[in-house]
Length: 190
Image (tube, rainbow, N blue to C red; front, side):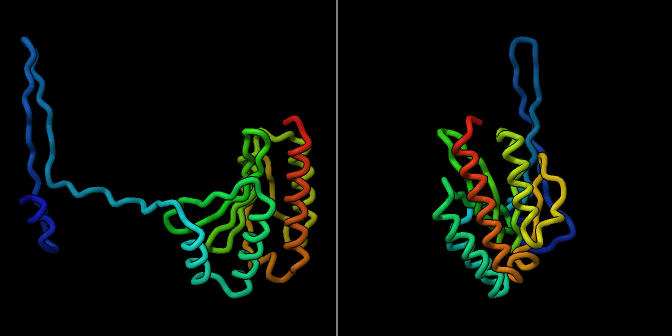
């Protein structure tokens, strides 16, 4: 009944009920309160995205040129990643490119439905520092990515439309940097 009254429209009040249960054990008494009529907290809306959902939302949010680059990155990722995972964002879907070596996985970059690309340096703490620096140097040699900032423990971001739409060469240089990094990881002990 309390839920019904509270849901029955936009009232200027809400109805609540407090129940106090008494528990006894020997000479000890404990009162345990329970409040009825408190609205449930709204869910954050997080869910595991699928390829279909990702591209449906990306199609709605991105220009044709940006969408073309995202599709190209996904197609390339399917061929070169050890693993691709789908994100669980409430508003933005994502896919993440991973390398595998033995039982370990390294998250390299993520692409989002809003056209952002995150470089996941912050997730690569177990990779040898010299390999990270070589990857960073190759990424920042890419046209449009020279100023992505500090990388150690960070997740630098850029927009597909700001970097890749204007330069197909930048897309190819990015892919090559990721591929070179993957080869370096596969060849290393760490």
